[in-house]
Length: 238
Ligand SMILES: Nc1cc(-c2ccc3ccn(Cc4ccccn4)c3c2)[nH]n1
Image (cartoon, protein in one colour):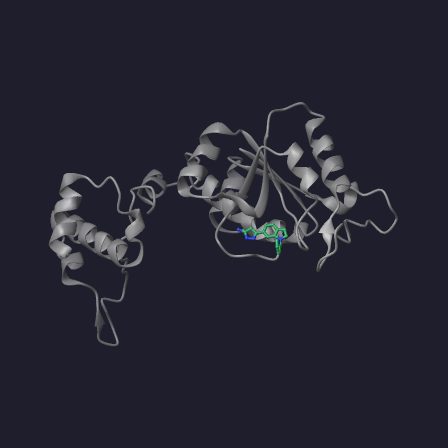
């Protein structure tokens, strides 16, 4: 999987991708990330990327020309790629959409704006407009990193532990169970006995109950299409 990121702050992307799962996936060659500075696609000596909005209003708007020049530069190799514009107005990004991107795209271009947004005409050159949530960020870079991180985790071999991606919460339709590690007793805060029992069946049931309890409390909207067994456990909790 190859990601190409268009941004005026390449260092935001370059710094984040060096670490953790993403850094390992890059070193393994499972994923490639290439970052392009939109200022390199300007035609004036000041490398200007923004201007005042037509119709007035606060703030500045990013001009179409650097985006157009960068997109045409990428398309010159005629390789297929999905062009995704990050914006507060886009379709909601979910684990399901991450899975779809991973399955359907060999290469993605993530287009990051700043200021008050970008010239609407850029949308004529993109495939998808995506929002990572109902809040306004200062630019598209964090949203692009969320997409890269969540898609890479789904690539077989990226995590080094196949179960992790499958077991990640949201994949199963409810939140994760609580996690504990050493010490057993921290200032009187003890690890639940069941987790020390070695009884894997009991542990699995305890984890499922806890996951359903957490989901019922914090994200009841996720509780759809439960199996009869999960529904039975949920009813016990109510
Ligand atoms: N889920 C998301 C995505 C974004 C996002 C993505 C790209 C840009 C480019 C500029 N801004 C700032 C901005 C401020 C005011 C109104 C519009 N946009 C962005 C914000 N916010 N929240």
